[in-house]
Image (cartoon, rainbow, N blue to C red; front, side, top):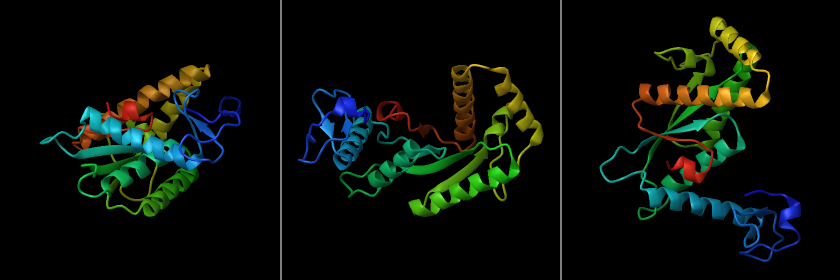
Length: 208
């Protein structure tokens, strides 16, 4: 999927007559305008969740949605919001909580990041619990969530800065960060006693 103009060309949307702006996994067959593309992704997301039966009868409905202030993360929250607000026959049977991972290692930047997350929480306007945690908590076996004014453990922040400084290649840094993020999410979910986690990689991975 993507929005490369050279792939989309001058074709029209598969679902309506508007000019196409996005293509699907098979760009030779399906291109979409913005609104139809969003609708298509919503349908795929819901289909995958249903097909894989993530929320089986009798299993826990609790699920942790990971938010790190990105467009895909916003899309994940909005998609789940749409799902749980459907009528009873189409409703996504989930009880979501949100995990916000804050990454800034400078106090002033961290406060800005925290306020931005609180604003997003207000905009979403859903009765979900939001759990805030700093990335440096990954180094603790017993993690602590942020309950009031966010602060930084300067010792852990220094360790983060040192470790990422030791990896010179960008791809290595990204992979290292991905692994640490997965570990942090695992520990956070365990601390919250939540078995299911949704991340914004794609609908298929989200449903795993």
